[in-house]
Image (spheres, rainbow, N blue to C red):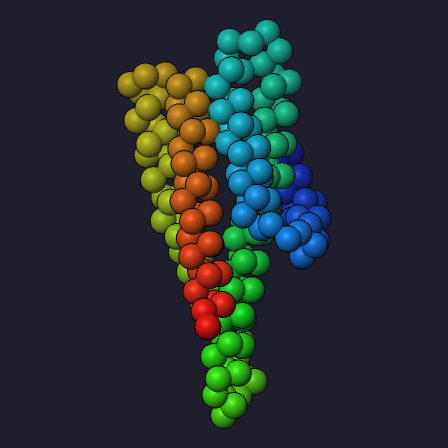
Length: 168
């Protein structure tokens, strides 16, 4: 468990740099979310595979690296979208101050964090229910599928946000 967290701490600045250099943020988010979901679902086969311990370790590292990447992209996108929106508003009305321009960055990041925590609240309940009624491997498999299902709508939200920032 600790290895995934350590990998996440190391990979966060790397994905921050990748985010700064990439042109297609939605594709980066999709790839990171897909690999993260595969890592979560990969834990499902650890109970049946002869090399289950190695698969669990690799899955743990993948989840640590790519879940950190998803959060880094989400937080950076929220901040950047807010800055673009406030800069556009500020350009329309020259009376706005520089302090007002960046005052809602924390709120934008907090909104992403709030949605994340709300979604994370249900995970242990759902996982425990599935383990009790269907089994451990199925719970991990459904966890991987559901994590991918939560990444896909965020692609549409990000697209709508960015489009609304560049309205003429």
